[in-house]
Length: 453
Image (cartoon, rainbow, N blue to C red):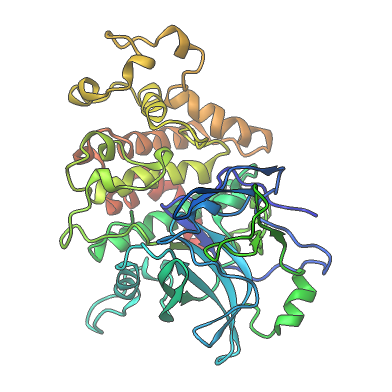
């Protein structure tokens, strides 16, 4: 069985990128999956009243310890949600939700149903409503509006772990980060996707928010015949006791319906910015740095060093830069492994240079990586991250050179200039999303490929 490997145990919170294109044709025996299952590991735990339950669980599914009060709803293939949505397969999961492909029995079409954890942000559906609303006829439609999913239905379900807010959207085909892992987009496709992503963020910001039906004719039976049955693995407790009602009987490996990155053409390069579980409006609420749940590799440094100060639009710009870097290359600019956040901070310094002195002074974990003069410690010297230009060579250019699509010096210079500005330590020095769209690299290189997509 062929599967699409992925570098994370759960998708990142900024942005879960999904593209729309014509559905590829697979043989009925071919059922690609997002993640390699790997060996069964003893990692999942959940709390009961008296003791901690330990699970055997496979790699490639959501963290089973989160099937507890306030956490995931134990959704299973075959469930009918809201007396309407017949669950057919799993599309993905994140730290705040699971996402399922379901057949809408009223409209006879497929939808993506997002089932949030019971303790999820109640504002997500309001954000999506606002972003998908049409402006007054007297105002022009922002070009990024079509890059945000349209909320179709919302409802709540009650389960053993609490009340869960759910909503439906048109299903996209796959997670862009997953198909780009260990694969390389053509240069023109990478440019077009980068421009679209910046445009989607610009639209989100213009509406006052920080991000923090292609196979409808198939019946469920026909869908399974074409794409295969859902891949499930029984969940068992390490102590061999019966499962609690908080957890599902089986884990479902997410289905992959997309293409591999190298097979993308410009006509395929259409994305949707999704997963607004961390979205908020700076004008209406204070979202402090200490409350930011974006993974460290993509999280703006002010979330750590100005933890009592509200985050704002510049934090998205930092995350946008890390996403564009991944689209253009093969290696993330900062480590996406499960490392301590202090190690990510040390990589920020390695790649970008000195951080603001006040942050340096208050960084409690720095002694492990640097001495008082800023030189790397002996134990850290061998693990230092390369500076920006060298990181570009290792993570982007080397791989493009291998496939004959090396980035020319003038474009490289413009791209790195944009990255330096977007990854400025000081939030006030970062460009706005509209500034990013007006940058030399976007205007001279990315825009033309976007217009042809």
